[in-house]
Image (tube, rainbow, N blue to C red; front, top):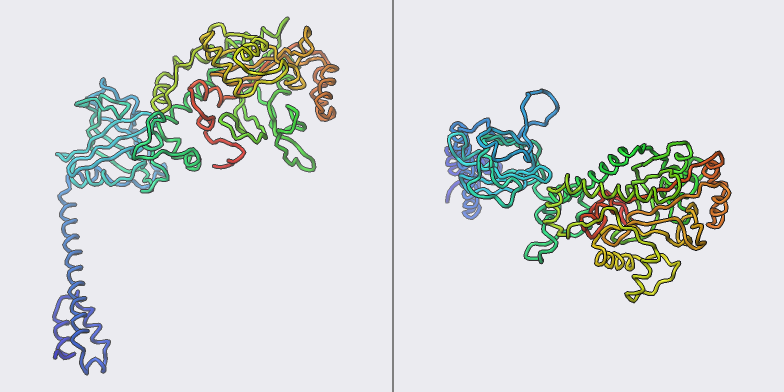
Length: 549
């Protein structure tokens, strides 16, 4: 039998990694001196040998790492950057990916972008860098200035991390169809991680970018709720980057065209004392010791601006509708593009201005957003938007007649339902070849209290709607500018006159005849691009079931 003293002698004369066994024997005390069982001692020896192997392995790895580091030819050309806290100005110039073209081949470029895709194979790593909707391939290959360690570092960077990549731009040996910059690539000489992403993403961008017209394969699709719950990631897709650039262009073109026509932009209050459109679809809020409402439109204030001699005005701002409508085209908060204009003889003067404004927007999108539209169509294919110049104007009665000829039962004073709107849009497209048209002379019964009645038909009104791809995107009319008639119409709609006294009084001191309309920005973008849900064109949508993010 091996005695305790013998075991102690063996252990203390071994390498330090076996000290654990010595400690154990020492801890046995007098009881241990009496002897240790063979089984227990054998177990202790195995543990000691395991600890020794572990220590030897760690020492070997440390030595190898030290040797690699000393032999790393790319040391200082890769790694994780410290947090950027605005400590210096180096004067370096970063190049947008969209500017990387074949004409710049041979230049050394510095790019900051997200790591969109990565594929490493030993001495070689291919990565795809993404800025908004532009992408470019970069290659990290072991050579004079690139080490194996650098390739491994690049391969291990988490997707969606932000990286700085420097290298020489060169012509791609073959077309890179998966990138927007298809004829060039970057031969990387430096790569640094600026901001690391978590390794596990709530959704994969490749899934979120999968075309809708392609049948589901082994990869899944990202449903709408998952997208909206993780909107920050979802908005990074090249498609969403393009959608919101098109939407920004719609807003800019709206502003530019009206400004060129002598309109003035103004800003209306969003907290008001009475429902601006009447009815119950209004958000009530507490206002100190009284109640107030979120504006359903800037309508009353546009008219008051006209009475204040700003004869052509427009506004861009939030509009609130407390409609419990969970449809593809309704939101509780959206961006309203509103305009109002004084006219001389007939409200059609305004109607023609609005029609020409839409034509200017459509032309501007064709000219300025061709690249973005092409990107969007890859995921959401749609027929090119068609329109006429000048815009097509139909009477409401003509629209009703077209529906009746196609088997739809509808009364002369009935409003158009969504299915009937869509059907009429298809009929108009077939007959006139346009996706945009104006429907004039709506029934008075379905319009707001401030709508001017038709002087020739008491059941009709001087009002109109405008449609894109068979769905309404603007509602407008000539407004009542006579205070007595306005009071009468408000009472018929059950509106408390005392709460709109300031509005009615605005017309007691002389008012220009005027007309205008309100447009939903998200709808215009949605229908122009042929998308199937308004939440695709609202960056952070608000509907009856969503209040976050």
